[in-house]
Image 1 (cartoon, rainbow, N blue to C red):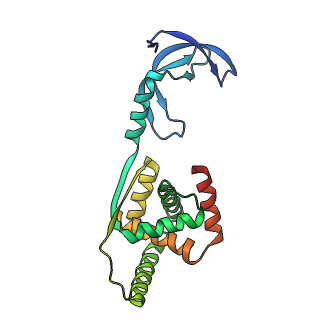
Image 2 (image 1 turned 180 degrees about the horizontal axis):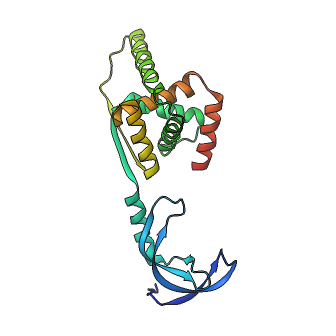
Image 3 (image 1 turned 60 degrees about the horizontal axis):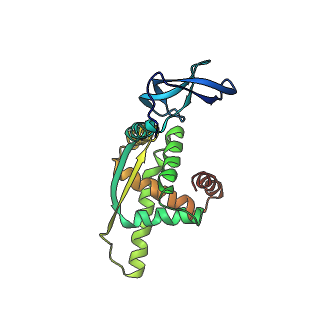
Length: 210
């Protein structure tokens, strides 16, 4: 593989100039395409006409991937296993092709909507109703409450992390309590009420991820 250096030249298609242009390799801070973070001091090909970044050499890819990873925030919680069972059941109701990757998308959609509408107060009631319903079902079947737990782990962008924090402040919940309440609300919308508007919105979201 040819190693490129600062000052090397080449050619590449420039979207801004709408033409194949001469390039000069230089080190730049490159914003991610979604606007959520920057890869700093990366060797890239720059259009000599408009100064736009138009080429990314293979040798820069690991550094960009590392920069992207550092921008993501880790959200982890150990929940009673039934919560993830319920979340996965709701996802399956929305699309039979659902995988664990949709958990973050579904939760992110609810977090963003609740923060924007400042409706975090409905989470407490949804969670209480969910817990009561589970207890009633166990009692009817003569089953003891299970102690099984499962880990929910997600890498989220800074925007979702900020929304999660804002929702925690609105509700007075810690992170684990908030995740449990969000799952309870998803369960109510999708599995109990079968809210067609919500299900259609989640189906559209799922199509983008599958």
